[in-house]
Length: 192
Image 1 (cartoon, rainbow, N blue to C red):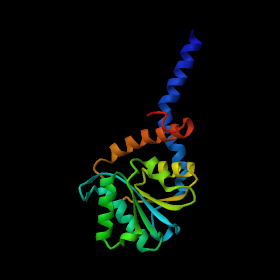
Image 2: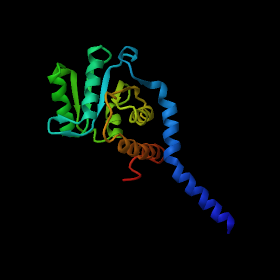
Image 3: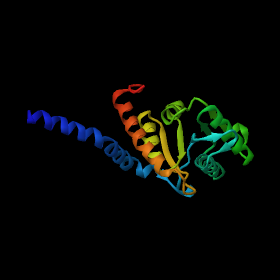
Image 4: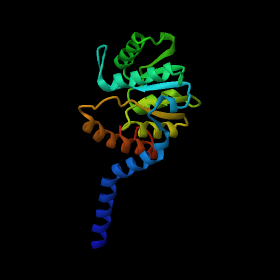
């Protein structure tokens, strides 16, 4: 009887610690693939801007910082093309914003099927080289997924300010990272 309680107790501890352990492992594995200075970033074919909230044509602070960062990479000739990935309204708003900032329309690709990080990464396809543009808390998971799908990727941080809801974003990211690990181990769609 005690053996059963110990086994159940250990399983509960493992389940409760999984989000923290998986997050730490992925952060450690991807740390050297994340850049913060444009002059130190490698040259890649594409910048992949991961979607976030957009309200009509108005970008949330997080999304605006991602697009501004991709524009900086483009202007520094670190990428040739910018992929705006997100829901249809996000991709449209990002594209319009980038064009207002001087990025030629033919240098922007809209990925309106990128409804989440995994979809955005999968839509890139094997053989492409990308710089994933997002906030630092989000990049380890995105790079983990890119590695899983054999995509040549590095990350670039788009943290240009303090975000009002950063604690909420980090809590969500902890769970999303755990889900990504389980999706990779157990197969996509297991939790759908």
